[in-house]
Length: 234
Length: 234
Image 1 (spheres, chains in turn purple, red):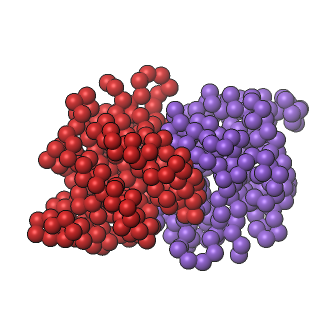
Image 2 (tube, helix red, strand yellow; image 1 turned 135 degrees about the horizontal axis):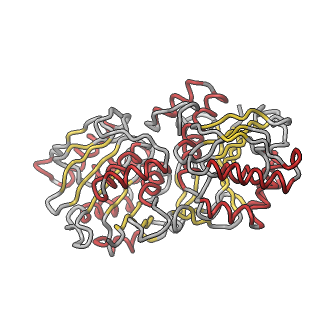
Image 3 (cartoon, chains in turn purple, yellow; image 1 turned 180 degrees about the horizontal axis):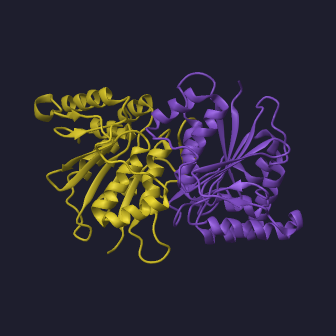
Protein backbone atom coordinates (compact mmCIF):
# COMPACT_ATOMS: atom_id res chain seq x y z
CA UNK A 1 0.00 0.00 0.00
CA UNK A 2 1.18 3.55 -0.73
CA UNK A 3 1.91 5.56 2.43
CA UNK A 4 -0.95 7.36 4.16
CA UNK A 5 -0.35 11.09 4.20
CA UNK A 6 -0.37 12.80 7.56
CA UNK A 7 -0.56 16.60 7.81
CA UNK A 8 0.45 18.13 11.15
CA UNK A 9 -0.63 21.71 11.85
CA UNK A 10 1.93 23.80 13.76
CA UNK A 11 1.27 27.29 15.09
CA UNK A 12 3.04 29.68 17.49
CA UNK A 13 3.02 28.42 21.11
CA UNK A 14 1.38 25.12 20.13
CA UNK A 15 2.19 22.44 22.70
CA UNK A 16 5.23 20.57 21.39
CA UNK A 17 4.31 17.15 22.74
CA UNK A 18 0.75 17.45 21.36
CA UNK A 19 2.08 17.18 17.82
CA UNK A 20 5.46 15.50 18.40
CA UNK A 21 3.77 12.46 19.96
CA UNK A 22 1.57 11.71 16.91
CA UNK A 23 4.44 12.63 14.53
CA UNK A 24 6.67 10.12 16.35
CA UNK A 25 4.09 7.33 16.30
CA UNK A 26 3.18 7.79 12.61
CA UNK A 27 6.82 8.05 11.52
CA UNK A 28 8.09 5.01 13.39
CA UNK A 29 8.69 2.07 11.12
CA UNK A 30 11.05 -0.82 10.38
CA UNK A 31 14.18 0.40 8.60
CA UNK A 32 13.28 -1.23 5.28
CA UNK A 33 10.18 -1.26 3.07
CA UNK A 34 7.63 1.34 2.05
CA UNK A 35 6.76 3.60 5.00
CA UNK A 36 3.22 3.35 6.33
CA UNK A 37 2.89 7.10 6.69
CA UNK A 38 4.55 10.25 5.41
CA UNK A 39 4.48 13.37 7.56
CA UNK A 40 3.94 16.92 6.31
CA UNK A 41 4.08 19.71 8.86
CA UNK A 42 2.47 22.99 7.88
CA UNK A 43 1.90 26.45 9.30
CA UNK A 44 1.26 30.05 8.40
CA UNK A 45 4.89 31.15 8.73
CA UNK A 46 8.26 29.82 7.55
CA UNK A 47 9.41 29.18 11.13
CA UNK A 48 7.22 28.54 14.14
CA UNK A 49 8.21 28.82 17.79
CA UNK A 50 6.20 26.18 19.64
CA UNK A 51 5.80 25.48 23.34
CA UNK A 52 6.11 27.87 26.27
CA UNK A 53 8.29 30.86 25.26
CA UNK A 54 9.15 29.11 21.98
CA UNK A 55 10.72 26.08 23.68
CA UNK A 56 11.60 24.68 20.25
CA UNK A 57 11.49 26.32 16.82
CA UNK A 58 10.25 24.45 13.75
CA UNK A 59 10.48 24.85 10.00
CA UNK A 60 7.16 23.53 8.64
CA UNK A 61 7.74 21.33 5.59
CA UNK A 62 4.86 22.95 3.69
CA UNK A 63 3.03 26.26 3.68
CA UNK A 64 -0.53 26.57 4.88
CA UNK A 65 -1.52 27.58 1.35
CA UNK A 66 0.10 24.48 -0.19
CA UNK A 67 -1.67 22.06 2.14
CA UNK A 68 -4.92 23.95 1.76
CA UNK A 69 -4.67 23.79 -2.03
CA UNK A 70 -4.11 20.01 -2.00
CA UNK A 71 -6.16 19.19 1.04
CA UNK A 72 -7.77 16.12 -0.55
CA UNK A 73 -4.27 14.52 -0.68
CA UNK A 74 -4.07 14.24 3.11
CA UNK A 75 -5.52 11.24 4.91
CA UNK A 76 -4.86 12.24 8.50
CA UNK A 77 -4.89 15.78 9.87
CA UNK A 78 -3.42 16.36 13.35
CA UNK A 79 -4.40 19.52 15.27
CA UNK A 80 -2.43 20.18 18.48
CA UNK A 81 -3.50 22.28 21.44
CA UNK A 82 -1.97 25.11 23.44
CA UNK A 83 -2.73 27.25 26.47
CA UNK A 84 -6.36 28.53 26.45
CA UNK A 85 -5.34 32.17 25.81
CA UNK A 86 -3.30 31.04 22.79
CA UNK A 87 -6.20 29.04 21.38
CA UNK A 88 -8.69 31.86 21.92
CA UNK A 89 -6.39 34.38 20.17
CA UNK A 90 -5.77 31.91 17.35
CA UNK A 91 -9.38 31.06 16.55
CA UNK A 92 -10.29 34.77 16.45
CA UNK A 93 -7.33 35.66 14.16
CA UNK A 94 -7.27 35.60 10.36
CA UNK A 95 -5.00 32.52 10.48
CA UNK A 96 -7.36 30.76 12.85
CA UNK A 97 -10.36 31.54 10.67
CA UNK A 98 -8.50 30.16 7.65
CA UNK A 99 -7.79 27.03 9.66
CA UNK A 100 -11.47 26.80 10.62
CA UNK A 101 -12.41 26.97 6.99
CA UNK A 102 -9.82 24.29 6.13
CA UNK A 103 -11.26 22.03 8.83
CA UNK A 104 -14.82 22.41 7.49
CA UNK A 105 -13.54 21.52 4.00
CA UNK A 106 -11.54 18.55 5.33
CA UNK A 107 -14.48 16.86 7.06
CA UNK A 108 -16.52 17.17 3.84
CA UNK A 109 -13.94 15.30 1.72
CA UNK A 110 -14.58 11.65 0.95
CA UNK A 111 -11.56 9.40 1.69
CA UNK A 112 -9.07 8.97 -1.17
CA UNK A 113 -9.79 5.78 -3.07
CA UNK A 114 -6.25 4.47 -2.41
CA UNK A 115 -6.43 5.20 1.31
CA UNK A 116 -10.08 4.34 2.00
CA UNK A 117 -9.92 6.33 5.21
CA UNK A 118 -9.67 9.90 6.37
CA UNK A 119 -9.14 11.00 9.98
CA UNK A 120 -9.31 14.38 11.69
CA UNK A 121 -7.45 14.08 14.97
CA UNK A 122 -7.13 16.73 17.68
CA UNK A 123 -4.88 16.52 20.70
CA UNK A 124 -5.47 18.31 24.00
CA UNK A 125 -7.02 21.77 23.54
CA UNK A 126 -6.67 21.30 19.77
CA UNK A 127 -10.28 20.12 20.14
CA UNK A 128 -11.21 23.75 20.76
CA UNK A 129 -9.97 24.66 17.28
CA UNK A 130 -12.29 21.96 15.92
CA UNK A 131 -15.10 23.18 18.16
CA UNK A 132 -14.63 26.80 17.09
CA UNK A 133 -14.81 25.65 13.45
CA UNK A 134 -18.14 23.99 14.15
CA UNK A 135 -17.01 20.52 13.09
CA UNK A 136 -17.86 18.95 16.44
CA UNK A 137 -21.53 20.01 16.29
CA UNK A 138 -23.78 17.12 17.21
CA UNK A 139 -20.84 14.89 18.22
CA UNK A 140 -19.16 13.47 21.33
CA UNK A 141 -15.72 14.91 21.99
CA UNK A 142 -13.07 15.36 24.65
CA UNK A 143 -10.13 17.67 25.37
CA UNK A 144 -7.68 18.43 28.18
CA UNK A 145 -9.45 17.78 31.49
CA UNK A 146 -9.02 21.43 32.48
CA UNK A 147 -10.68 22.68 29.26
CA UNK A 148 -13.89 20.63 29.07
CA UNK A 149 -16.13 23.63 29.81
CA UNK A 150 -14.24 25.79 27.35
CA UNK A 151 -14.77 23.21 24.59
CA UNK A 152 -18.49 23.43 25.17
CA UNK A 153 -18.37 27.24 25.19
CA UNK A 154 -16.47 27.65 21.89
CA UNK A 155 -18.65 25.02 20.26
CA UNK A 156 -21.81 26.88 21.28
CA UNK A 157 -20.36 30.15 20.01
CA UNK A 158 -19.60 28.51 16.67
CA UNK A 159 -23.14 27.15 16.45
CA UNK A 160 -24.52 30.66 16.86
CA UNK A 161 -22.05 32.12 14.34
CA UNK A 162 -22.62 29.41 11.76
CA UNK A 163 -26.34 29.09 12.45
CA UNK A 164 -25.93 25.34 13.09
CA UNK A 165 -29.08 23.48 14.11
CA UNK A 166 -30.89 26.54 15.36
CA UNK A 167 -27.81 27.95 17.11
CA UNK A 168 -27.19 24.90 19.32
CA UNK A 169 -23.98 22.89 18.90
CA UNK A 170 -25.42 19.68 20.28
CA UNK A 171 -21.87 18.71 21.31
CA UNK A 172 -21.53 16.14 24.10
CA UNK A 173 -18.29 16.83 25.96
CA UNK A 174 -16.98 13.83 27.91
CA UNK A 175 -13.87 13.14 29.98
CA UNK A 176 -12.05 10.26 28.34
CA UNK A 177 -8.52 9.46 27.13
CA UNK A 178 -9.88 9.90 23.64
CA UNK A 179 -13.22 9.84 21.83
CA UNK A 180 -14.01 8.33 18.45
CA UNK A 181 -16.96 10.43 17.28
CA UNK A 182 -17.57 8.29 14.21
CA UNK A 183 -17.49 9.56 10.66
CA UNK A 184 -18.96 12.60 8.96
CA UNK A 185 -21.41 12.22 6.11
CA UNK A 186 -18.46 12.28 3.69
CA UNK A 187 -16.69 9.54 5.66
CA UNK A 188 -14.10 11.43 7.73
CA UNK A 189 -13.56 9.98 11.20
CA UNK A 190 -13.23 12.60 13.93
CA UNK A 191 -11.13 11.63 16.93
CA UNK A 192 -10.46 13.98 19.84
CA UNK A 193 -7.83 13.23 22.48
CA UNK A 194 -7.46 14.45 26.06
CA UNK A 195 -4.33 16.22 27.29
CA UNK A 196 -0.84 16.11 25.80
CA UNK A 197 0.36 12.49 26.10
CA UNK A 198 -3.15 11.20 25.26
CA UNK A 199 -2.20 12.04 21.68
CA UNK A 200 0.28 9.15 21.77
CA UNK A 201 -2.40 6.67 22.89
CA UNK A 202 -4.80 8.02 20.30
CA UNK A 203 -2.30 7.74 17.45
CA UNK A 204 -1.52 4.14 18.43
CA UNK A 205 -5.24 3.42 18.34
CA UNK A 206 -5.51 5.01 14.87
CA UNK A 207 -2.57 2.86 13.70
CA UNK A 208 -4.35 -0.19 15.09
CA UNK A 209 -7.56 0.69 13.22
CA UNK A 210 -5.72 1.28 9.95
CA UNK A 211 -2.87 -1.25 10.03
CA UNK A 212 -3.81 -3.76 12.70
CA UNK A 213 -3.04 -4.66 16.29
CA UNK A 214 0.38 -6.11 15.56
CA UNK A 215 1.76 -2.93 13.99
CA UNK A 216 0.44 -0.79 16.85
CA UNK A 217 1.91 -3.17 19.43
CA UNK A 218 5.28 -3.07 17.66
CA UNK A 219 5.36 0.75 17.66
CA UNK A 220 4.36 0.90 21.34
CA UNK A 221 7.15 -1.55 22.17
CA UNK A 222 9.77 0.46 20.28
CA UNK A 223 8.53 3.67 21.93
CA UNK A 224 8.48 1.84 25.30
CA UNK A 225 5.02 3.26 25.86
CA UNK A 226 2.37 1.69 28.08
CA UNK A 227 -0.88 2.13 26.25
CA UNK A 228 -4.18 3.05 27.79
CA UNK A 229 -7.54 2.66 26.19
CA UNK A 230 -10.13 5.26 25.26
CA UNK A 231 -12.22 4.57 28.31
CA UNK A 232 -9.33 5.52 30.57
CA UNK A 233 -10.26 8.56 32.63
CA UNK A 234 -7.86 11.32 31.57
CA UNK B 1 15.35 30.92 42.44
CA UNK B 2 16.73 31.81 39.00
CA UNK B 3 15.69 29.34 36.30
CA UNK B 4 17.79 26.22 35.81
CA UNK B 5 19.30 26.15 32.34
CA UNK B 6 18.57 23.13 30.21
CA UNK B 7 20.55 22.46 27.03
CA UNK B 8 19.01 20.03 24.55
CA UNK B 9 21.29 18.52 21.90
CA UNK B 10 19.65 18.06 18.47
CA UNK B 11 21.29 16.24 15.55
CA UNK B 12 20.12 14.93 12.17
CA UNK B 13 17.71 11.95 12.52
CA UNK B 14 17.63 12.24 16.31
CA UNK B 15 14.41 10.73 17.66
CA UNK B 16 11.94 13.60 18.04
CA UNK B 17 10.15 12.28 21.12
CA UNK B 18 13.47 11.58 22.88
CA UNK B 19 14.12 15.29 23.19
CA UNK B 20 10.60 16.73 22.85
CA UNK B 21 9.45 14.79 25.95
CA UNK B 22 12.08 16.30 28.27
CA UNK B 23 11.71 19.74 26.59
CA UNK B 24 7.95 19.59 27.27
CA UNK B 25 8.34 18.55 30.90
CA UNK B 26 11.01 21.16 31.70
CA UNK B 27 9.13 23.96 29.93
CA UNK B 28 5.74 23.32 31.52
CA UNK B 29 4.88 25.85 34.18
CA UNK B 30 2.10 27.96 35.63
CA UNK B 31 1.41 30.99 33.44
CA UNK B 32 2.81 33.50 35.95
CA UNK B 33 6.03 33.75 37.92
CA UNK B 34 9.69 33.03 37.16
CA UNK B 35 10.03 29.89 35.08
CA UNK B 36 11.74 26.92 36.75
CA UNK B 37 13.74 26.11 33.65
CA UNK B 38 14.85 27.77 30.42
CA UNK B 39 15.47 25.61 27.37
CA UNK B 40 18.29 26.07 24.87
CA UNK B 41 18.41 23.71 21.91
CA UNK B 42 21.73 23.40 20.11
CA UNK B 43 23.24 21.58 17.18
CA UNK B 44 25.99 21.66 14.60
CA UNK B 45 23.85 23.20 11.84
CA UNK B 46 21.38 26.06 11.58
CA UNK B 47 18.50 23.69 10.80
CA UNK B 48 18.24 20.04 11.81
CA UNK B 49 15.90 17.44 10.34
CA UNK B 50 15.04 15.08 13.18
CA UNK B 51 13.14 11.79 13.21
CA UNK B 52 12.75 9.24 10.42
CA UNK B 53 13.25 10.96 7.04
CA UNK B 54 13.34 14.35 8.79
CA UNK B 55 9.85 14.00 10.24
CA UNK B 56 10.18 17.50 11.68
CA UNK B 57 12.78 20.20 11.07
CA UNK B 58 14.16 22.34 13.87
CA UNK B 59 16.03 25.61 14.21
CA UNK B 60 18.34 25.17 17.23
CA UNK B 61 18.27 28.26 19.44
CA UNK B 62 22.06 28.21 19.85
CA UNK B 63 25.07 26.96 17.92
CA UNK B 64 27.14 24.05 19.15
CA UNK B 65 30.08 26.43 19.51
CA UNK B 66 28.11 28.87 21.67
CA UNK B 67 26.94 26.20 24.11
CA UNK B 68 30.38 24.65 24.16
CA UNK B 69 31.98 28.02 24.96
CA UNK B 70 29.60 28.62 27.88
CA UNK B 71 29.15 25.04 28.97
CA UNK B 72 29.43 25.84 32.67
CA UNK B 73 26.22 27.92 32.35
CA UNK B 74 24.08 24.84 31.72
CA UNK B 75 22.67 22.84 34.60
CA UNK B 76 20.97 20.04 32.68
CA UNK B 77 22.16 18.53 29.41
CA UNK B 78 19.74 16.29 27.48
CA UNK B 79 21.13 13.86 24.89
CA UNK B 80 18.52 12.11 22.71
CA UNK B 81 18.94 8.83 20.83
CA UNK B 82 18.36 7.69 17.25
CA UNK B 83 18.53 4.51 15.19
CA UNK B 84 21.73 2.52 15.88
CA UNK B 85 23.22 3.27 12.42
CA UNK B 86 22.68 6.99 13.02
CA UNK B 87 24.36 6.86 16.42
CA UNK B 88 27.31 4.85 15.11
CA UNK B 89 27.87 7.29 12.22
CA UNK B 90 27.51 10.25 14.59
CA UNK B 91 30.00 9.11 17.23
CA UNK B 92 32.61 8.38 14.53
CA UNK B 93 32.13 11.78 12.82
CA UNK B 94 33.90 15.05 13.64
CA UNK B 95 30.66 16.42 15.11
CA UNK B 96 30.25 13.33 17.26
CA UNK B 97 33.82 13.54 18.52
CA UNK B 98 33.26 17.21 19.41
CA UNK B 99 30.15 16.15 21.32
CA UNK B 100 32.15 13.44 23.09
CA UNK B 101 34.67 16.02 24.15
CA UNK B 102 31.89 18.35 25.34
CA UNK B 103 30.40 15.51 27.41
CA UNK B 104 33.72 14.77 29.09
CA UNK B 105 34.08 18.47 29.95
CA UNK B 106 30.49 18.66 31.23
CA UNK B 107 30.82 15.81 33.74
CA UNK B 108 33.98 17.45 35.14
CA UNK B 109 32.22 20.77 35.90
CA UNK B 110 31.15 21.42 39.47
CA UNK B 111 27.51 22.59 39.76
CA UNK B 112 26.93 26.35 39.50
CA UNK B 113 26.73 27.89 42.96
CA UNK B 114 23.23 29.29 42.18
CA UNK B 115 21.92 25.97 40.90
CA UNK B 116 23.70 23.55 43.25
CA UNK B 117 23.03 20.73 40.83
CA UNK B 118 24.16 19.54 37.43
CA UNK B 119 22.60 16.67 35.50
CA UNK B 120 23.65 14.81 32.37
CA UNK B 121 20.58 13.03 31.04
CA UNK B 122 20.43 10.65 28.09
CA UNK B 123 17.25 9.28 26.55
CA UNK B 124 17.00 6.02 24.63
CA UNK B 125 20.12 5.28 22.55
CA UNK B 126 21.48 8.69 23.53
CA UNK B 127 23.20 6.60 26.23
CA UNK B 128 25.45 5.26 23.46
CA UNK B 129 26.73 8.79 22.81
CA UNK B 130 27.62 8.97 26.51
CA UNK B 131 29.13 5.48 26.39
CA UNK B 132 31.21 6.31 23.30
CA UNK B 133 32.51 9.41 25.11
CA UNK B 134 33.65 7.24 28.00
CA UNK B 135 31.57 9.04 30.61
CA UNK B 136 29.70 5.90 31.66
CA UNK B 137 32.89 4.02 32.59
CA UNK B 138 32.54 2.33 35.97
CA UNK B 139 28.82 3.20 36.19
CA UNK B 140 25.40 1.56 35.96
CA UNK B 141 23.41 2.67 32.91
CA UNK B 142 20.48 1.76 30.70
CA UNK B 143 19.28 2.47 27.17
CA UNK B 144 16.57 1.32 24.75
CA UNK B 145 15.86 -2.36 25.48
CA UNK B 146 16.97 -3.31 21.96
CA UNK B 147 20.35 -1.58 22.37
CA UNK B 148 21.63 -2.89 25.71
CA UNK B 149 24.41 -4.98 24.10
CA UNK B 150 25.40 -2.10 21.86
CA UNK B 151 25.77 0.21 24.87
CA UNK B 152 28.21 -2.26 26.37
CA UNK B 153 30.10 -2.55 23.06
CA UNK B 154 30.60 1.20 22.47
CA UNK B 155 31.56 1.71 26.10
CA UNK B 156 34.26 -1.01 25.86
CA UNK B 157 35.54 0.53 22.62
CA UNK B 158 35.79 3.92 24.34
CA UNK B 159 37.67 2.38 27.26
CA UNK B 160 40.27 0.99 24.84
CA UNK B 161 40.52 4.29 22.94
CA UNK B 162 40.76 6.42 26.05
CA UNK B 163 42.88 3.94 28.00
CA UNK B 164 40.34 3.94 30.86
CA UNK B 165 41.10 1.60 33.77
CA UNK B 166 43.33 -0.67 31.74
CA UNK B 167 41.05 -0.68 28.71
CA UNK B 168 37.95 -1.96 30.53
CA UNK B 169 34.84 0.25 30.78
CA UNK B 170 33.53 -1.36 33.94
CA UNK B 171 30.03 -0.31 32.81
CA UNK B 172 27.10 -2.25 34.26
CA UNK B 173 24.27 -2.22 31.72
CA UNK B 174 20.84 -2.90 33.22
CA UNK B 175 17.29 -2.97 31.89
CA UNK B 176 15.30 -0.36 33.79
CA UNK B 177 13.00 2.58 33.01
CA UNK B 178 15.92 4.80 33.99
CA UNK B 179 19.08 4.59 36.05
CA UNK B 180 20.51 7.20 38.41
CA UNK B 181 24.23 6.45 38.30
CA UNK B 182 25.06 8.92 41.05
CA UNK B 183 27.39 11.87 40.66
CA UNK B 184 30.83 12.25 39.14
CA UNK B 185 33.74 13.44 41.27
CA UNK B 186 32.88 17.02 40.26
CA UNK B 187 29.27 16.52 41.32
CA UNK B 188 27.41 15.94 38.03
CA UNK B 189 24.58 13.42 38.29
CA UNK B 190 24.39 11.04 35.32
CA UNK B 191 20.94 9.67 34.52
CA UNK B 192 20.28 7.34 31.59
CA UNK B 193 16.76 6.53 30.41
CA UNK B 194 15.38 3.58 28.47
CA UNK B 195 13.52 4.01 25.16
CA UNK B 196 11.73 7.10 23.89
CA UNK B 197 8.86 7.81 26.31
CA UNK B 198 11.06 6.82 29.29
CA UNK B 199 12.58 10.27 28.85
CA UNK B 200 9.29 11.74 30.07
CA UNK B 201 9.33 9.64 33.26
CA UNK B 202 12.98 10.46 33.82
CA UNK B 203 12.47 14.20 33.42
CA UNK B 204 9.57 14.12 35.88
CA UNK B 205 11.85 12.31 38.33
CA UNK B 206 14.56 14.97 37.83
CA UNK B 207 11.94 17.70 38.46
CA UNK B 208 10.93 15.87 41.63
CA UNK B 209 14.54 15.70 42.83
CA UNK B 210 15.15 19.39 42.12
CA UNK B 211 11.80 21.04 42.86
CA UNK B 212 9.85 18.51 44.90
CA UNK B 213 7.08 15.95 44.54
CA UNK B 214 4.29 18.49 44.27
CA UNK B 215 5.74 20.24 41.23
CA UNK B 216 6.40 16.94 39.45
CA UNK B 217 2.88 15.75 40.22
CA UNK B 218 1.41 18.98 38.86
CA UNK B 219 3.35 18.67 35.58
CA UNK B 220 2.34 15.00 35.19
CA UNK B 221 -1.29 15.99 35.74
CA UNK B 222 -1.17 18.76 33.14
CA UNK B 223 0.58 16.43 30.68
CA UNK B 224 -1.97 13.71 31.57
CA UNK B 225 0.92 11.29 31.90
CA UNK B 226 0.86 8.17 34.09
CA UNK B 227 4.27 8.01 35.67
CA UNK B 228 6.31 4.88 36.19
CA UNK B 229 9.24 4.53 38.51
CA UNK B 230 12.86 3.73 37.73
CA UNK B 231 12.50 0.12 38.72
CA UNK B 232 9.83 -0.39 36.06
CA UNK B 233 11.06 -2.90 33.52
CA UNK B 234 11.37 -0.99 30.25
